[in-house]
Amino acid sequence: MMRMLIAASAVVAVVLGATSLAYAPYHQQPAQPSGSPLEMAREQLTTAKTHAGFAAAADAIRSVRQHTGHAVNCLVGSGDRRFDRQWGHVCEGQGNGVLPDLRSVGASAQVMKLAEDATQHGVATLGQNDVAAAKAGAKKLADMIDDTLKALR
Image 1 (cartoon, rainbow, N blue to C red):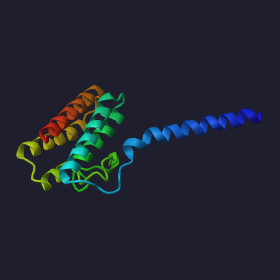
Image 2 (tube, rainbow, N blue to C red):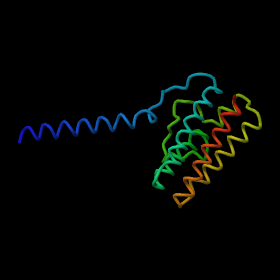
Image 3 (cartoon, rainbow, N blue to C red):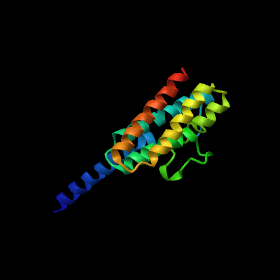
Image 4 (spheres, one colour):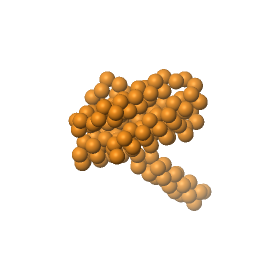
């Protein structure tokens, strides 16, 4: 009986430890931004694209919305009225938000339009109730973010 209890405790400890490790990589960010605002914008765009991809691959509307919310929050930054704390801020520590960082470096009108269009599309996608439509919206969001990244090169 004691052996079974020890074995069960060991299994629980391993599972809990592995679960926290799997969650950590994209939810733990550096405390302070580093690099130029342009480099920070690129980093935040990359994180936003990753989360839009997670949203597009999710099976439940809650997960689609959560990761789409992550992407939108990365795009707008915590000082924007469209920032929603309920989604969390996976880009915290990477910069001030894609749009504010791009504005601070005087990004071209084309780049600003691409980033703003992606943001507006992400906000609209958050309003979807149908899983398939939300996933399609998240896929398009990932593509729009990628277009913004390409325009910065």
